Image 1 (cartoon, rainbow, N blue to C red):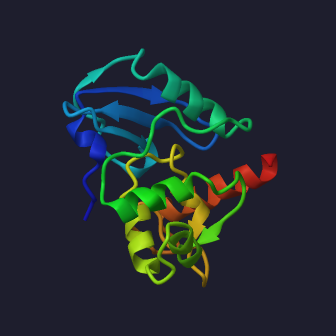
Image 2 (image 1 turned 180 degrees about the vertical axis):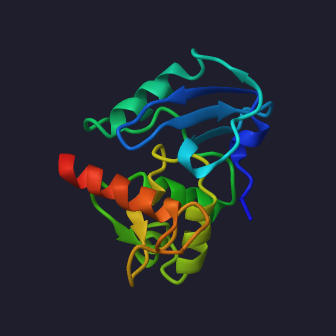
Length: 169
């Protein structure tokens, strides 16, 4: 079963090329911003293509795997306080490094909430802006974009992003 993409409900979107695969940056009618790898979804986004959408975010995404860039130009979206703290803490993980779900939970203020931290990463609407690929299980890679199967395209993408980051850091 394919998990519904957040860009399925986009009002406006644009494509962004990155060294590890193309992404879609989108915004819906409620100003909810998403950034997703196109390789993880079969269907194109809905809405209208806008090559000028969110220029600061698009530039940041295109550069973030090529060079060290500052903090993302978009703040973490509205969510529960713990989920927002997880997303914010995830943004503090340096390029090419990883943290476990337990470590992320501790960084977000609740060392016993590793599962909740994993759920926050699973529901991250902003790939690369909030680098959830840098969060792994204590026993290995963990999941990515809703799957934990080791041979899945999702986990191959996660491994590829991490390998790429480590090669440039």
